[in-house]
View (cartoon, rainbow, N blue to C red):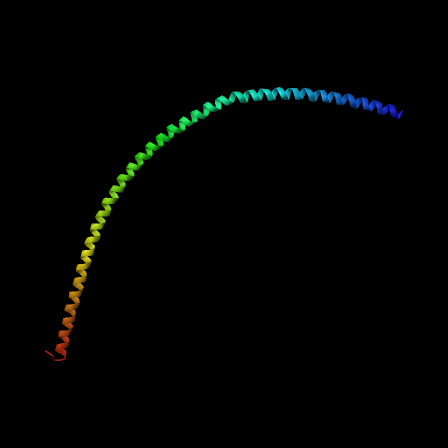
Length: 132
């Protein structure tokens, strides 16, 4: 009796296993058709990406040209500003030269003033010591 129950259980397991295998085969067929469709779609996209890449390249080239043109204009403006700064530098150099001349004159005046003060002090001392 026990043997009969085991045979029935094995038959049920075999029937269930065959049903499962059948479903798996059906799913595998669907998966293989889906994969072949995906491959076809990817092949179709290959040409589109090349065209898209060339479009993007041309847009980058035109943008680069525009950017270079604007940079050239900015460079011209900076050159003009540099010229103005050169003129200002020349003026500052002239002012520095004039200050140097003024400082030399002040130095000369200091020497003369010290000489006069020294001579005046000597005259006062000479009178104080009755040298004069």
